[in-house]
Amino acid sequence: MRIDFYHLTATPLERVLPSICERLLGAGERLLVVTAPERVAGLDRELWTQSPESFLPHAAVGSERDATQPILIASESEAANNARNIALADGRWRVEALGFDRAFYFFDSATIDEARSSWRALKDREDAERHYWKQDENGRWVEGP
Image (spheres, rainbow, N blue to C red):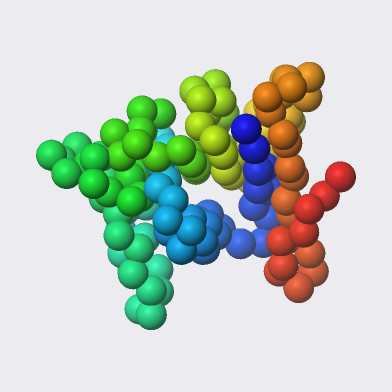
Protein backbone atom coordinates (compact mmCIF):
# COMPACT_ATOMS: atom_id res chain seq x y z
CA MET A 1 0.00 0.00 0.00
CA ARG A 2 1.08 3.57 -0.58
CA ILE A 3 1.25 6.10 2.25
CA ASP A 4 1.65 9.77 1.39
CA PHE A 5 2.83 11.91 4.31
CA TYR A 6 1.78 15.54 3.72
CA HIS A 7 3.61 18.05 5.90
CA LEU A 8 1.29 21.06 6.17
CA THR A 9 3.49 24.11 6.57
CA ALA A 10 2.20 26.83 4.22
CA THR A 11 -1.30 25.68 3.29
CA PRO A 12 -3.94 24.48 5.76
CA LEU A 13 -5.66 21.12 5.45
CA GLU A 14 -8.91 22.78 4.35
CA ARG A 15 -7.19 23.97 1.17
CA VAL A 16 -5.14 20.82 0.50
CA LEU A 17 -7.79 18.14 1.09
CA PRO A 18 -10.18 19.33 -1.67
CA SER A 19 -7.51 18.92 -4.36
CA ILE A 20 -6.84 15.35 -3.20
CA CYS A 21 -10.59 14.70 -3.23
CA GLU A 22 -10.95 16.09 -6.76
CA ARG A 23 -8.14 13.92 -8.11
CA LEU A 24 -9.54 10.76 -6.53
CA LEU A 25 -13.07 11.47 -7.73
CA GLY A 26 -11.74 12.17 -11.22
CA ALA A 27 -10.16 8.72 -11.19
CA GLY A 28 -13.44 7.11 -10.06
CA GLU A 29 -12.11 6.41 -6.57
CA ARG A 30 -13.77 6.80 -3.16
CA LEU A 31 -12.26 8.34 -0.05
CA LEU A 32 -12.77 8.00 3.67
CA VAL A 33 -11.67 11.12 5.55
CA VAL A 34 -10.92 10.41 9.21
CA THR A 35 -10.58 13.18 11.74
CA ALA A 36 -11.23 13.91 15.40
CA PRO A 37 -14.96 13.77 16.26
CA GLU A 38 -15.12 17.50 16.95
CA ARG A 39 -13.75 18.26 13.43
CA VAL A 40 -16.18 16.14 11.36
CA ALA A 41 -18.84 18.86 11.00
CA GLY A 42 -16.24 21.53 10.21
CA LEU A 43 -14.62 19.49 7.44
CA ASP A 44 -18.06 18.69 6.06
CA ARG A 45 -18.78 22.43 5.85
CA GLU A 46 -15.38 23.20 4.34
CA LEU A 47 -15.84 20.69 1.52
CA TRP A 48 -19.21 22.27 0.63
CA THR A 49 -17.85 25.80 0.54
CA GLN A 50 -14.23 25.30 -0.59
CA SER A 51 -14.71 26.44 -4.17
CA PRO A 52 -17.76 27.79 -6.01
CA GLU A 53 -16.49 26.24 -9.27
CA SER A 54 -16.15 22.76 -7.84
CA PHE A 55 -18.59 20.25 -6.41
CA LEU A 56 -17.31 17.51 -4.11
CA PRO A 57 -20.09 15.04 -3.37
CA HIS A 58 -19.64 13.97 0.24
CA ALA A 59 -21.29 13.56 3.64
CA ALA A 60 -20.48 13.18 7.28
CA VAL A 61 -20.97 9.62 8.51
CA GLY A 62 -24.24 8.72 10.13
CA SER A 63 -26.94 8.65 7.47
CA GLU A 64 -28.60 5.73 5.76
CA ARG A 65 -26.81 6.83 2.56
CA ASP A 66 -23.23 6.44 3.85
CA ALA A 67 -22.60 3.54 1.46
CA THR A 68 -23.30 5.71 -1.60
CA GLN A 69 -21.01 8.61 -0.69
CA PRO A 70 -17.89 9.05 -2.84
CA ILE A 71 -16.30 10.97 0.06
CA LEU A 72 -17.28 10.10 3.61
CA ILE A 73 -16.06 12.04 6.65
CA ALA A 74 -15.88 10.11 9.92
CA SER A 75 -14.08 9.86 13.22
CA GLU A 76 -13.49 6.11 12.85
CA SER A 77 -11.52 4.18 10.23
CA GLU A 78 -14.42 2.05 8.99
CA ALA A 79 -15.20 2.73 5.34
CA ALA A 80 -18.99 2.52 5.21
CA ASN A 81 -18.66 3.82 1.62
CA ASN A 82 -16.29 0.97 0.64
CA ALA A 83 -13.45 3.43 0.00
CA ARG A 84 -10.00 2.01 -0.74
CA ASN A 85 -8.37 5.38 0.04
CA ILE A 86 -8.16 6.97 3.46
CA ALA A 87 -7.17 10.51 4.48
CA LEU A 88 -6.00 10.90 8.06
CA ALA A 89 -6.87 14.54 8.53
CA ASP A 90 -6.11 15.19 12.19
CA GLY A 91 -2.40 14.40 12.39
CA ARG A 92 -3.03 11.06 14.09
CA TRP A 93 -1.81 7.82 12.49
CA ARG A 94 -4.20 4.88 12.68
CA VAL A 95 -2.96 1.35 12.05
CA GLU A 96 -6.29 0.58 10.33
CA ALA A 97 -5.06 2.71 7.43
CA LEU A 98 -2.84 -0.21 6.43
CA GLY A 99 -5.98 -2.04 5.30
CA PHE A 100 -6.56 0.48 2.51
CA ASP A 101 -4.84 0.72 -0.87
CA ARG A 102 -3.64 4.26 -0.24
CA ALA A 103 -3.39 6.56 2.77
CA PHE A 104 -2.98 10.32 2.84
CA TYR A 105 -1.55 11.30 6.22
CA PHE A 106 -1.75 15.05 6.91
CA PHE A 107 0.25 16.56 9.76
CA ASP A 108 1.51 19.96 10.86
CA SER A 109 4.02 21.32 13.35
CA ALA A 110 1.78 20.37 16.28
CA THR A 111 1.66 16.71 15.21
CA ILE A 112 5.08 16.32 13.58
CA ASP A 113 6.46 14.10 16.36
CA GLU A 114 3.71 11.53 15.85
CA ALA A 115 4.28 11.68 12.07
CA ARG A 116 8.00 11.04 12.55
CA SER A 117 7.25 8.09 14.82
CA SER A 118 4.82 6.69 12.25
CA TRP A 119 7.37 7.15 9.44
CA ARG A 120 9.97 5.19 11.43
CA ALA A 121 7.47 2.49 12.47
CA LEU A 122 6.51 1.91 8.83
CA LYS A 123 10.09 1.88 7.55
CA ASP A 124 10.62 -1.89 7.61
CA ARG A 125 7.16 -2.91 6.44
CA GLU A 126 7.38 -4.44 2.99
CA ASP A 127 3.70 -3.68 2.40
CA ALA A 128 4.11 0.06 3.08
CA GLU A 129 5.52 2.36 0.39
CA ARG A 130 6.17 5.70 2.12
CA HIS A 131 6.29 9.09 0.40
CA TYR A 132 6.95 12.44 2.07
CA TRP A 133 5.54 15.65 0.55
CA LYS A 134 6.30 19.24 1.47
CA GLN A 135 5.65 22.59 -0.14
CA ASP A 136 8.41 24.53 -1.88
CA GLU A 137 8.79 28.32 -1.81
CA ASN A 138 6.20 28.62 -4.63
CA GLY A 139 3.61 26.54 -2.77
CA ARG A 140 4.00 23.49 -5.03
CA TRP A 141 4.07 20.05 -3.45
CA VAL A 142 7.41 18.33 -3.95
CA GLU A 143 8.48 14.91 -2.81
CA GLY A 144 11.15 15.06 -0.16
CA PRO A 145 13.81 12.62 0.93
